[in-house]
Image (cartoon, rainbow, N blue to C red; front, side, top):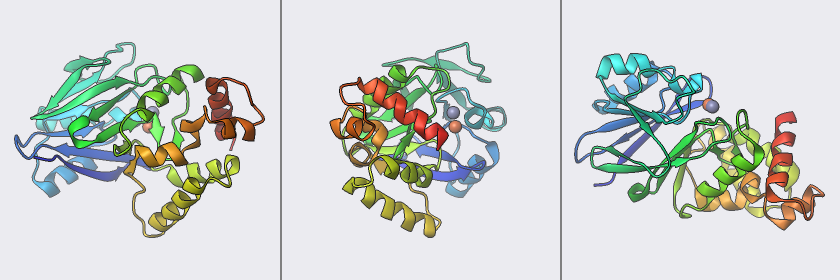
Length: 255
Ligand code: ZN
Ligand code: FE
């Protein structure tokens, strides 16, 4: 039976996500930005929280864990990197591990760069990727703890997923990402199409998520750092993709 996925806003621009397994009635929250909207979404659906799958240690992804754990006695699954303080962890996961949510299985991909502990969760049977602050729609996370080559490798790992994989990311940053991407690739037709779609969705107050990996491969300049046209647009012909990626990220930081 196909999983049910719900998304809802948390804090100022985070997404909260629930993934529910109708067969077992298990429900996981991907991260826990804050407890109240997660509880509200659970009550609206009549679901009981069984698991929290944590992507990384930042406060806007773990702030709701303690309250949710106390209310539901759910399992907390988190990255193996114990250097980062994540409260009340029951189970640590690393690259290649499988996490079960009832009968649904999620594959753990280590995607460091934004933080060193960052992991993404892929539900292969659902074609669903929860990438938090590694890959955004038409953007990517800031590189706080890792290096540019490290982050580029993480993005390539996500880019390699099937084109029909739905991307569920950590923040609603798409409009700002589109604005920046157009400064690099003003004539990219896929980006222009995405820009029009995003403008319409935002005008209707709708989320721009999920998107598809296949669409991101064409419209997201950060996934195209190894494209000769992107290197040429930055006057970086012949440089490594990681260098081109680093330049893109620095320009976005200053934009
Ligand atoms: Zn973060
Ligand atoms: Fe975040």
